[in-house]
Length: 206
Image (cartoon, rainbow, N blue to C red; front, side, top):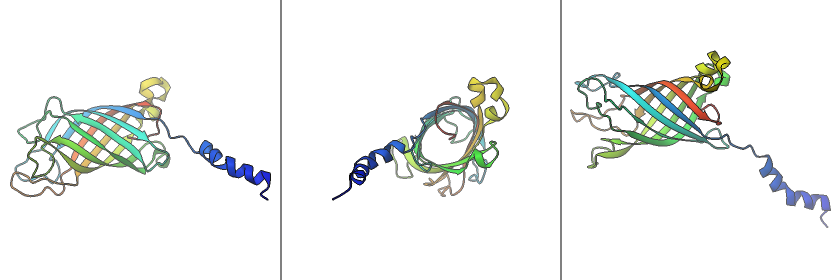
């Protein structure tokens, strides 16, 4: 006969485990005004570097695992970019993916965080050489550096200033299209950089 204490533990054990499981932090929405630069590194011949004002909005939704954080948002250069370039467009880009943490602020004295989202983008001219639509999907990987200047330098002001961050993103396509000469773009990252103002109660994500 099974002792009553053992039977009670078997019945209540799963419920206790679920109750003690850590609750994931809430979502965070970040507004990121800044700049966009393309074709500044390993650009195809005849492709000039181009820069323009950028607006990004990002939502991160953490899970119970630090390795799984939903990452979605969009970016646009509302006024286009400098010079005559195929990048000079004010069409938006949408993206969704997962954030993989690299280095947290706990390891840098609170000064720097590095993350590497892997994303699926939906943008004008995307989708590969065989896509006949104006918009298409591509895969990309990002490296994001975030400096929480608000927490380090402006915490005494409280409110939004205490959460202000400086961010920089390098985005490299994993499904490169052909350039104007018919060659594949193997390494030609895009750069986004500026200020980030997060809203919400989630952990320190991009």
